[in-house]
Amino acid sequence: MSNKTVDVLVIGSGIAGLMTAHILADHLNVMIITKSNVMTSNSSCAQGGMAAALSPQDGWQLHLADTLKAGQDHHNPGHVEMLVKRAPAIVEILVNLGVSFDKNEDGSLTLGMEGAHQHRRIVHVNGDKTGQAFTNALIETVKNRVTIKDYTMVSRLVTNEGRVIGVETEDEIIYANATVLATGGMGQLYSHTSNVEEATGDGFALAYRAGAQLTDMEFIQFHPTLLMKDDQTYGLISEAVRGEGAKLIDEHGIRIMDHHQSKELAPRDIVSREIHRVLARGQNVYLDCSMIENFHERFPSLGERCERLNIDVSKSPLQVVPGAHFVSGGIETNSVGQTTLPGLYAVGEVACTGVHGANRLASNSLLEGLVFAEQVATHILANKRELHLIRLTKSDEVPYENSKLPSKKEIQKKMTASVGIERELKSLLHMKKWLHTLLPAINISPKDDRETLERKNMILVACLITEAAIQRTESRGGHYRSDFLERDDQNWLGQYITFSEKTGVAIVDKGKEQFVAIESL
Image 1: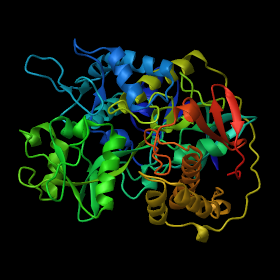
Image 2: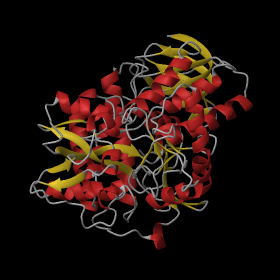
Image 3: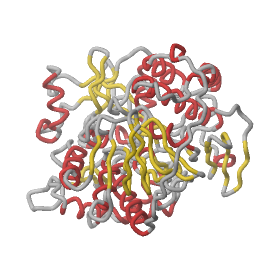
């Protein structure tokens, strides 16, 4: 197995990883490793836009308040303040990178409206192709300044005396002074998702196996509106479509959100649950877009999909289904992206910075990726250290049988049924029992191909999500327990469920740790 050495290794090619690489590229030797090609990521699929308080009527304080309200007071407030204050400057940085935001006739930026925002503050590019524009601009600026190793999957993080010193892939070990996980989310653990095929939770599994701490894994946001036809999903329908007046209706044309004060622009967890309940009654749910003028000009990506599917939006409502979209938790980091393992940083959706709380405010994810990429890169530049190469000793492999591994579809089906939009103890315990029978089969081996690695990672991450969902006996944000219907501030406000391979699961309350006795994963 060959060895390479770089200054900084970035795992993932979404905007968080690309921005980190862009800032570092003029100063350090940077390599990007990505599981598919550099153009493929959840970021490139992002449609809704990016939030920034830019209008005279708006301000960072209002953006802060909306973020805290949507996430139900489960945040790191200092990190949220940094996020929303930095947003207008991030817009300027993107403009300087060549991003052409949509503008009004007077030359001002067009600001869209999305759920749980008090004001119009969502900037877009070409309607619903914002993420693609961001990633294209960043790829253009880094492609000749960093090494890009695509179609490569990382099997494990390499550590020495508690410090991450690089990664192992299928054909080599790559050493690095700093390793940055920017691997995105884990939507593929569910039957319906807005995420790309590569989003199988690999970054969470890599960090956990190396000994890093994870937190808030129970808080999974389900996007209310994935486009559905003939039992297949075809990507998400941006919340901006509802922001422009589209209405959710059942098979009889009855508006299903009519009873809610914010109608279709209620927080995503509320809208998703309402759709889920209609579906559970055996009815389909549709999004009526017929009132939106110039639909194809305003939402070209969705318009193109509708044309391919022979759907005339002016005559036919769009069938929708909720799907796994974003995990608010992840690898625990501080304000500069450091994890609990020296040498390892995390940024973007794989990280838990505390800015999303229990439920991410719409269009804060692209912003988070860019703001914290700045933080990570700045910290790395200020803390360069000499790399000391070591001779690695491999631990003995634990016997395993890949024949015991379930298929991806079986994992997805069980997660959707038991640890999905609505959860309750009986099904969660049943899921936990099934998962724990699989744990002996998920040890990583050099013989594992990509498909096997992905399934092992999916099982491990499913264990973390399921255990967190069992432990949190309340409903808050993206975590909804039908047997604990209410938010319980008396027992759960300010409490965080954390995981690490060394300590198992812990409930952390304002610096005090109370360990819950469960099986070690």
